[in-house]
Length: 153
Length: 167
Image (cartoon, rainbow over all chains, first blue to last red):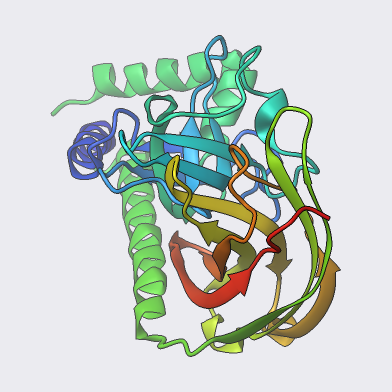
């Protein structure tokens, strides 16, 4: 019951938000006090141009974990409409240039996976615990499996 | 059919659904709020205005920022993030937005304020087109809720100018 409905909701969210991963878990304290570790963010990616103040999720080449920070500088080209974007975590003293790849000073549109549009507190702790203590993940999957096998439906 | 496992499963699903509904209603209640914020920014001084070694113009300025953002707060508001950005156009770029200063307002009592400050973040152009440039100063706010949808908007203030010559 739970598993099927969770899957349906996940797939529906993917369709509605038009994004590969419509939900991310906040992993660091760089956006506190707004977003704390364990919160989840709902993402949405539209064709609207990227503007200062938006909270975006982006990937840096060579890093597998996406980063969720705020856009503080935008430079949009006259001719091509392409943008150079600089981001910064609200709680960080400096901007994200240190996090970007070697020699990279700006983010472009292709690095950005989505904008954060909504948020739910605390719900993401389940994912963090399962990633950092895999034994709990195995116990949970084992228990769920046991439930499926022993149910008489 | 009445085993402990089934009851636990049904209870969990029900409580999670109710929680999700409550979060959604809390978020929807934010739509009932009609904010009426106001703000004013004065540039007190252009501290210096130089062309950097890499060829980009940079300005340092001191501003007086005063605002009343109390009407943005609802019971579902955790904090309001505000920032002041300079917006201008250059031959190379159709839009440039450079954040100069930001702050977090944690509660309604702090939402009516006045501050005298120099720019927190460097005002650097991509290129050297800033001499005599006319620009807008926009005060953006981002309402971050305790749960649900985030709202953002801005006030645009026009008519600011940079000096014709470096100093």
